[in-house]
Amino acid sequence: MQDIISIAKSAKDASISALSLSEELKNNALIKIAEEIENNKELIFNSNNMDLQSASILLNEGKISNSMFNRLKLDENKLTDMIQGIKDVAKLPEPVNKILFEKNIAVGITLKKVSCPIGVIAVIFEARPDVISQIVSLCLKTSNAVILKGGSEAVNTNKAIFDIIKNSLKNFPQIPEGLINLVFSREDINEILSLDRYIDLIIPRGSNSLVKYIKENTKIPVLGHSDGVCHIYIDEYADLEKAINVCIDAKCQYPSACNSVETVLVHKSLLNLFVPRLIFKLIENNVEILADENIKNIFPSVTVACEADWSTEYSDKKVSLKIVDNINEAVNHINKYGSGHTDCIITENNDNAEYFMQMVDSAGVYQNISTRFADGYRYGFGAEVGISTNKTHARGPVGLDGLTIYKYKLYGNGDIVDDFVKGKRKFFK
Image 1 (tube, rainbow, N blue to C red):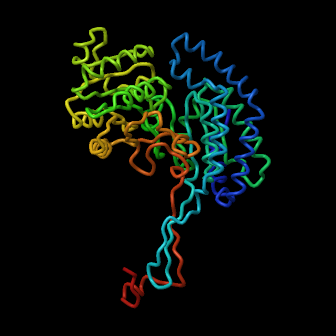
Image 2: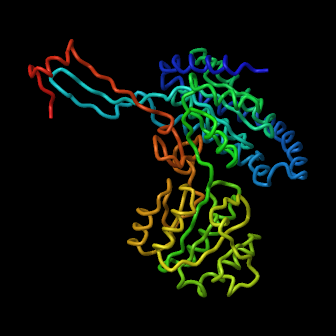
Image 3: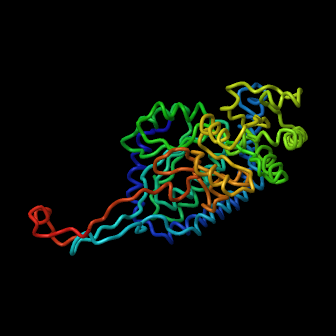
């Protein structure tokens, strides 16, 4: 059994040692990791197949969902994205020791605000083994130590990827061994949650119940989101062809993703002109539809949505449709039922778009583009450790900037406060 306290202590020590790592060293280590994952991809695929075989039994027994099973799969495309993501992080500018702000506050006294690592980050995740490479690359680049806790359904894949990364880092003895850690036992979660002395931030990636449990059972700051209830509002000034394409992509491209659309709101003027087209296209793509009474009246075959449906993350080929009287009703619906993740307006009216994007209180607000773009890789962050709906520190896809904080450095020459209190010296205005 792993000693989680010892791992956390080691990670804390490593996070201090990592403050001296150079940009060149970290980038070289990332390139080496990418190369070794490429060289060992058959080992990774074989490990993933073992997990998929076990997971298929759990799926048939109803113990895991289709969306979790799909997130567990690693194919050639996902692996290629993993490798490219690591390389992209290596190419990004150094995120720590950046001067964010500098000023002279008095003669001979200089204040600097400088970026620095957060320290020790614990990431608790389910199913997606590609998360490991994303998190490790971002934490290494930002000189943070990381403790990874993956789900049991991906234990073989997680261990294979982690071992490849650890072996790669052996080529760089300057990188402290405790910087990257992987724990396995479900019981480890509760112990991790209690270690506020050593762990500075927890990032959960998984089901609503997992995230809720973590938030309710730790004193450590938690960065993440519990729900991905994303919306698309089809405005009266929408280009209907764009609207169809965006809605289908947002729902069908990867339904189990947290940034897939769950509710489509449609302006009342488009009830007869647009809604039938959308419904036929959704049915063509095997999407189950729940709708309000307005839509039920013209499409009796659809299921009537209940109150709970408006705030449900389906993570499947299932969507809610609702008619709204105007843009204000759309905004109010989203702010009431949404999760603050990502919401979109389809419109050619830029005033309406700006109003929507100003008034919708979400981490991502879009015009005429699929909610599936809410992703650190697609934003050009190289990778992400998750998507945050928090309103402090980091929001939206969390990349390098979200894994840094800052410190203030003050430079003087024997200066004392008493001189300023007694009026002998003055601060600059």
